[in-house]
Image (cartoon, rainbow, N blue to C red; front, side, top):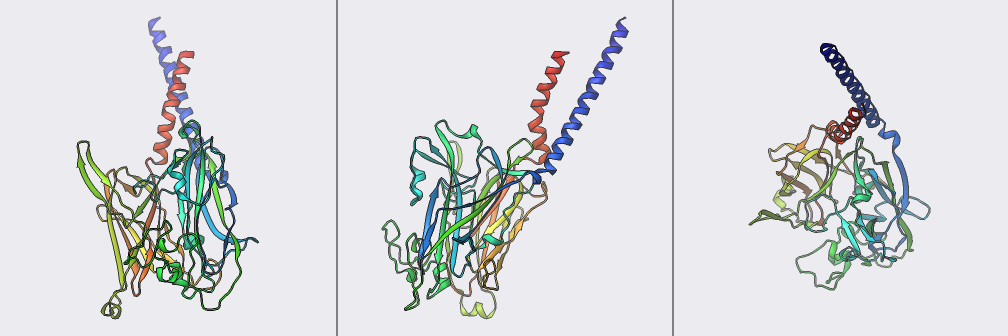
Amino acid sequence: MLFSRYINMCFVRRDFVFSVAILLLLFATTCLGSFLKTENKIKSAVFLSPKFELGPGSVINRYYYGIDFPKGHIALKSFNAEVVDEAGNSIPLHETYLHHWVVARYHQSKHVTHTENDTHRMLHNSNHVMVRNSGICQENALGQYFGLGSETRGTETRVPDPFGIEVGNPEVVPEGFEEKWMVNVHAIDTRGAEDKMGCTECKCELYNVTVDKYGRTIRPDYVGGLLCCSDYAQCKLKEGFEGPKRSLYLRYTVKWVDWDDSVVPVKIYILDVTDSLKLSNNSKGINSDHNCKVEYQVDSCGTDHKEGNGCVDVMKTSLPLQTGGYVIYGVAHQHSGGIGSTLYGQDGRVICSSIPSYGNGNEAGNESGYIVGMSTCYPKPGSMKIMDGETLTLESNYNSTKEHTGVMGLFYILVAEQLPYQHLRHSTRSSFFMDSNDMLLDS
C-alpha cells in the first residue's frame, strides 16, 4: 500500500515537473515571439514645436515646456527632428543652421497652471523637477534624453529590439506631480550673413557682444561659443542685405511601444570630452566631482604642421563609469571641423567610433561644408560590456587648419544592465514560482 502511494506520488511529481517544463517552454516561446514582433507594435507620431520667427542673422535659443509627447507607460524607440517652414518644407542648414536641439523630461506640480517658454531656469524651482538621464555630468548639465544638431537628418537614433528607453511609469512620478517634456531649440538664420560659418560657430566679433545674456562680462580670451549667440542675438550681415522674417518649427517624430515585460530597459549616458573630473576622499569613500563645460575652442595649427598635413586637434578625457552594462548603441556629436570621435575601454579596446559625414550639395540633408550625419554603433547585444567602475577614455578630433570656436565633443551611449534572456529570467522568476505555489496549494 505504501509502495503504491509512493509510486503514485512519483508519477504526480513527474507529471507536475513535465507540465511545468511545458509551461516554461510555451512562455519562453511567447516571450521570444514578442521580442521578434516588437517592430510590428511600434507606434509613431509627428509633432511640431511652438512657432518661432527668424530674420536674416537672428538667433533663437529657446526652451519650450509642456510640448506634445506620447502619453502612458511606454518605451521610446527613436526621436528625430528637423527645422521646417509653415508649409512643412525642410529648411537647409545654409539658410537656418540648427546648432542643436535637446529634449528633456521633467515632473511638474499639478498645481501649476501656466509655464513660461523663455528660460531654462524654470527647472530650478520646487514646482518643476528635471528627471535627468543616467549620465555623469554635474547637476542638470547634459541631462537630456535626446539631442543632436546639424547632423540630425542623417543620424540614426533607433533603439534596437528588444530594448527601449522607459518613460511614463506612474510609480516613479511623485505624488502631486505629472510627467512633462521640454525641447530646447537653438537655431541661427545665416541668410545674408557676412560669414556664414563664423555665425554658426558663434564668433563673438560677428555678434558684437561683450556681455552674456545675464549681463555678465565675457572674458577677453573667449572668442566664440554659446555665450555670444544667445537668444535674440544678431550676427553681422553683408552691407545692404535685407530679407523677410520666416515662421519656422522644429518638427519631431517619436516612435515608441507600450511598456511590458518583454522590453529590456536601457540607460542613457552622455559623456563630454571637456569634463575635468576631480576625485576627493572623505569618510564615506571617494567622491567624483564632474565639470562638463560642454564646449571648447580649437586653435589653428602652425604653418609647419599645415605643410606636413598634421593639423589635427586631439582632445581627450578619462572618466570612470560607476555602473556598467552592455552597450547597445553609441554616437558622437561634433560641429563643423570635426573628423571623428572614439570611446575606448580601460584596456584600450574601441567601444564605439563615430565619424561625421559632410554634405556636398545645396538641398536639405546634403548641405556642402556642414556635418549632415554621424555614424552610429550597434554592437551585437552582449559583445561590448563595460564593467562596473571601468575607466573610459573619450577622444574627440577636429581638423585644425583653421580656428574653430564653440565646438563640442559629446558621446551618447545606451547601456543595458541585463541582456534579453537575463531580463526575461529576472522578470518571470518570481511571478512563475508564485503561480506554482498557488497550483500546489490548490492541489
